[in-house]
Image (tube, rainbow, N blue to C red):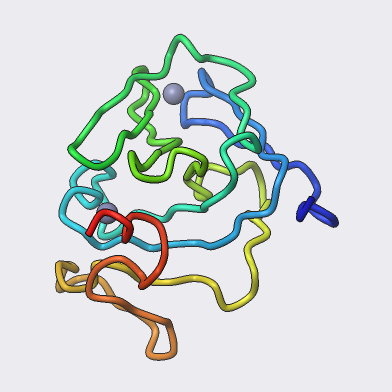
Length: 150
Ligand SMILES: [Zn+2]
Ligand SMILES: [Zn+2]
């Protein structure tokens, strides 16, 4: 249900050790500017696609995945090349996040148009530029993933 029209998408890490498949359209797409994501990804912000957990399948290289846990979430990355691929929030175990930047070719996560949100902009790098018309939130987007903790 809810996946009508979404062609399965594939992705992989930089060295190719880990490959995955996504079978459902993302419900949302987040650009997270928090200090943890910035450091974990070595980037100005990290981009996550949110999908039901059963829609993400690791097709190769499970043994090459390492896990990093914080109080709220865990991240999985390739221990060979360091590429971040997946994340899960402890408060929302039914959902998974993957990094759409690692999709093959020009595949997209199929998220609803206009559902890209910039979150935790309160800690964004001064180098990061957010388009004027993009939805932005100081912390989590209201009523969405992670907000249940408070
Ligand atoms: Zn790799
Ligand atoms: Zn973050």
